[in-house]
Image 1 (cartoon, rainbow, N blue to C red):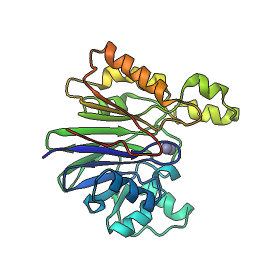
Image 2 (cartoon, helix red, strand yellow):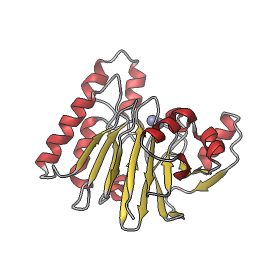
Image 3 (cartoon, rainbow, N blue to C red):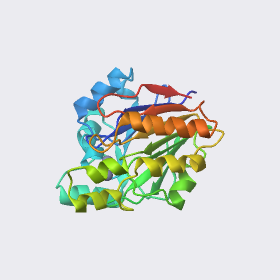
Image 4 (spheres, rainbow, N blue to C red):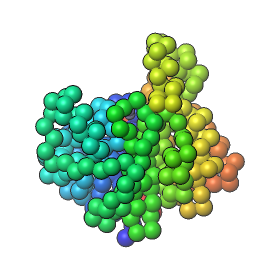
Length: 260
Ligand SMILES: [Zn+2]
Ligand SMILES: [Zn+2]
């Protein structure tokens, strides 16, 4: 059975993507409103009833905004780490009822998918990336991380599809009208990946089996999608991998489905 990836959108104003077969899917993050996620699913020709579980990377609003309401609406569980739920319940005083807990580092099965959450460095309670496997297909996702450390490399190497953050351009961030402390936080090892770090990681992460690359969480103020595309195309060309389908994720519209 074919395996599809549909990124509903990515950026500081919301992140959500679907890993799916033709009859079942996992949503990774629901950082838009319920209404907006449903709109984007329909626009992508995906029946919302296909979504069976919402996986949460971390508690930042651009990743959880619509989670609870979408979970109620679709009558499906939200799956996050214990610490992430603890924070959402205590700090935000929210009732999260239909929940499942995962432990970063522990693999579990859900329907036909095998899900491996792994820890990443980011300024949140218990941030994770995911590797999702289905039959012989494997997709790796890391959308908010301050560095590509050894664990991240181990998890994200040799995927059929890779979804990686390419948040900011260093010069644009330096020149941006933001406080020095915020710039330091973004640039730090618990912040976000800049274009150079993301592109430099590709030679190690991409292997002969890799068919698709999505670069996401592109800053609207401190980056430019065309620049990210150019850097990635040049790197793929240098690697002799112009065959890899490259997708530069937009904030406002879904990517379209890549089937493999
Ligand atoms: Zn974040
Ligand atoms: Zn984010």
